[in-house]
Every structure is written in C-alpha cells, then in structure tokens.
Image (cartoon, rainbow, N blue to C red; front, top):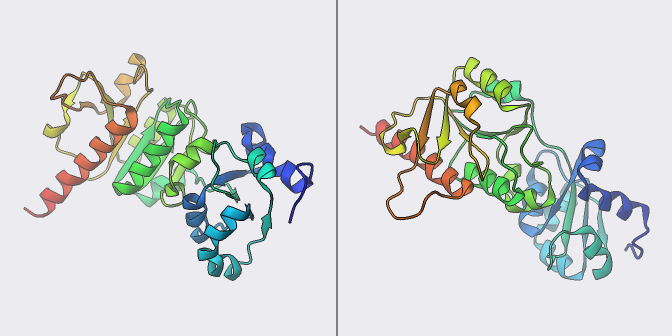
Length: 266
C-alpha cells in the first residue's frame, strides 16, 4: 500500500505523463484494464502495476499472469490514482511498461505484406485508433513518422485498446526518409488523398504495400506527393466531403485485405 502522492515510486510514475521523461526513462503508462490486460501477456512484461480498490477487483481475473510473471503490484487510494491518470473517470488500473517499439530496419526485414505509415497525424486519439484498426485489419506494422504525435502519449496508448502490444510499431524519422527506405525494401507506397488519386475500389493492390495517412486537416504535403508510387481516394457516395483519418484508415486497410482475399480464391 502506498499512502502518499510524495512517494518516490508515485513521483517517478507521475512524471511519465510528460514526453521528455518518457523518453528519458524509456517507459510509458498504460491506463485501464483493457490495455493492462494485453500488457500482461507481452514479452516485455510491465515493470509494476498500480491499482485502487476498484481496479484490484477487476484485475483479480489476471492474478495468474501477475503471479506467474512476478509483477509487483501496489495499492493506492483514489487521490493518488487521480494524479497518475489522464482520464476523468479512471478505471483504477495503471501499468508502467518499457518501450516496445522496434527499429525500422527490423520491421522491414520481417517483410509484412501490409503496413500503415502515420505522417504528421497530430491527434492522440486518432493515432491510437489507427493502431487499433491496423491490428484488427491484420496489418503487419505501423510506422509513426517523427512529426506525428507521440505513440506513447497516455491518450494514444489508451485509444489503441491494447493493440499497441499486438502490432509491431516503429518510431521513425521524417516522411521522406521513411518512404525512401520502405520503397527500397520492395514496397509499393500509396498515399491516401481526400479528393485525388485512383478510386480505392479500382486499385490492384500489390503483394507488399504501405499506406500513408496524412495530417487530419491538410493531408499529405504537396511537396511530398512525388515520393509515392500512387495516390488513392475513398469514393464519397453521400454528401460528406471526407472521412476522419482513422475512419479512412479502416476503409483502406480492409479494402486491401478484401481484394487480396478475393484474389486468393479465384
């Protein structure tokens, strides 16, 4: 039991809410039972788990994993839980985990058939949802370019709903460098555009493809368009001008997998 917000362990956990301390310690916070449950089964197990009374009851279902992997657990009151979390109504479970991203070279050497590239995605919720969608759609990796929001931002992690522990993730440099390396590894790179490019229903998706999703407000910078092998757009059948970046990600990734499935059963 930890009773004080001034406790050194709590202080070190609390500072992980800030990006510079996360990268200094190479650790991040996972809030909520869904994310913590997935962290418990990841090869890089949580360093510690912190719970309040409510969280302890929910986490009891995973006691076999906690005990089996010898993960230290600490109980705190509501006041301490509130200073650690970023949610209005915390679920009462937090894990401190070590960074789990992998090197770009390692990701490309694994040769996943489908990858997602986040280029200047600034909203934590959007990036987290995109990771979750990539996981659900069977993508083999997510590359987060340097000008995007931090993948380890607490809101981003929470929005992945545990998928951050399922999909290989790379934190890379700027988009030009990333695209160059991905294409050199044999991938066809498509940029998602709101109104230009090939209709996504008409694309013959290659065996190895990477899809680039741009900024929520202005998409892909015009000066970067020449780097891609092609641009694709999602047909708007109603009066909506475009889709949210995470919704568009879902449509495109599932369309690629649908086309591949149909091709394999011809």
